[in-house]
Image (cartoon, rainbow, N blue to C red; front, side):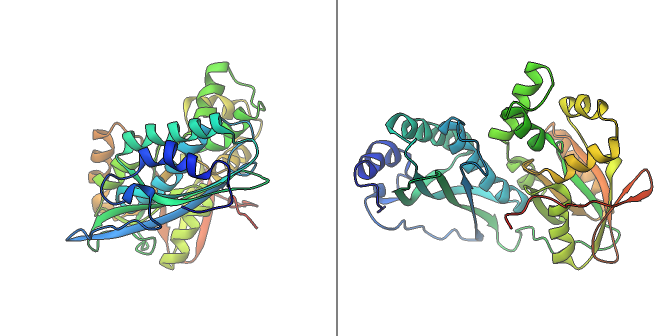
Length: 329
């Protein structure tokens, strides 16, 4: 690791990051590279996401939670591919607010999630910046050769499912910003979902072979289903009223004057980190059985059709959605 943080860089690496390194492959973070052996019969799956202060996390968010969100948004990509996580490369761009206690908190968050998800740090970079703070991870995982779930296998007649609930990430941001009028426990739960989403790794690995296409829901359900539609060269019909919502989401939804518009907000808000997938009708029962075994909610929300893009209907009537989801344009 090299960088511009002349005061704290090497101390940060030695005291905070080296203890998180893979014992065999990261070379104690004393080298510029990690060396990974191949795994017979498996493909190496890689993904990379960055998070930026003021865009993906709030300026006053605790850095242990920022570190965990960083890992989890990347793990969510692996979950959608049915991959088993292995390790990660880390880049830290410390702003002036990232003093030694904040860096210790960041490392503690990494350590906790490394233990929870069975992964190790492999290397990376750390630098100082005038701000805002930003962090990125390249996550590596393994999947049996040829079995990584693509976005391109959806075909007309296939069913569309989604795990968990939709909209809690968007509501959670409002909760974290103090802009949501619900009970304090509901607000706390939603803010927690925004700050520390839970990647569906167990489900992704358990159902590998059933989905014909899959994507993690990060930018918004409609936007991410649009990625499947584009890659597969098909259309997707989404039934808006079938959107699964949490208990807190239902309370918020029931207080809206226009439930159709409110549901549109939930399916375009993003930050849910669930898995949306298409499946052949013959495999729907098997998919549901695995979800039940994992005590995970799984909802059929639409179907693959001929055409292109995502079409939304509400109670059988077509609905126009102005914005599909989050973009950085």
